[in-house]
Image (cartoon, rainbow, N blue to C red; front, side):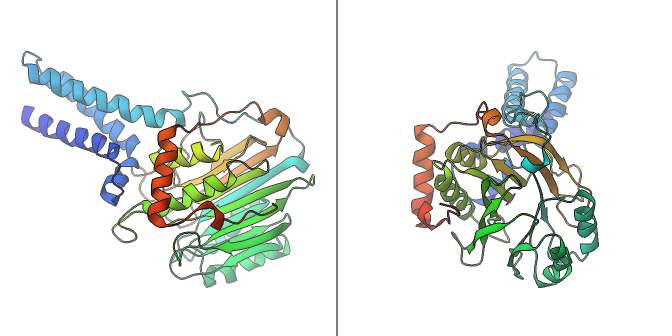
Length: 360
């Protein structure tokens, strides 16, 4: 038993330490994802050590201490996405529907043919905006029935798992489809007009993930998030970014994105809202995101029931309350963050100038 516990300790330590390495290979960056699962395993391992070790040998103390440190490190990353943490985004006290905006973000999974489930969710919740990822021409044909109530659209049907569609009840202007880093991976950008007349800069993203079947490195994904973050960092406009970022909320890259952009995460202090993988409860993490500027406070955020995809849809309702929201603060970049961002974008030969700026 001592040997088995020693081997497990080595594995936990490796899984914890390797993400500290700035290598962008998917095998390293992928370890950012299961921090909750690693924390659970580290807890179980620590209890097993306390039960089986007699701690008369120095190496028992070393092994147990190593696991405890790993547990604390994993918790440092994920605790902000629990109810033990203070809210980053204030709960809205505004009930005026003219100032509210509800968005459903749904990765539909291209081969999934259960469009009726998503359409029923839209009819039930009546969002102002529906964003779909991985939607091809078949999905477009099914969802076009929504245009009677959601006439403002942006459409980019693709068969490569990176198709995107936006259906909106509210007016969209300055709409543009852009390929920011990779030629076959689109993003969408538009200016949305709220019912109260205020304008909101919208960015819809779905960068490719680091994986053995996509990009071996995370640098393409990271570069896209960085240049979008930099493009909105100094804008006074109300801004919302949503989509499947193929990255977890607590990763180094997503934290860098939040630091550079100044945007807020309404999940902090409320929960993880794990949207992937819908079929494996123990292997779930938050891949679908919505970030917003200080102009908004939160009415509600919830994960919706299954639509047959490997992702659950995410629904978020915000209130446009600039005076109230000004009290909110997110993450702040340091010199090392800016240097890392510059290094990544230079490697990819991209910059913020390629990011559309609707309404500017």
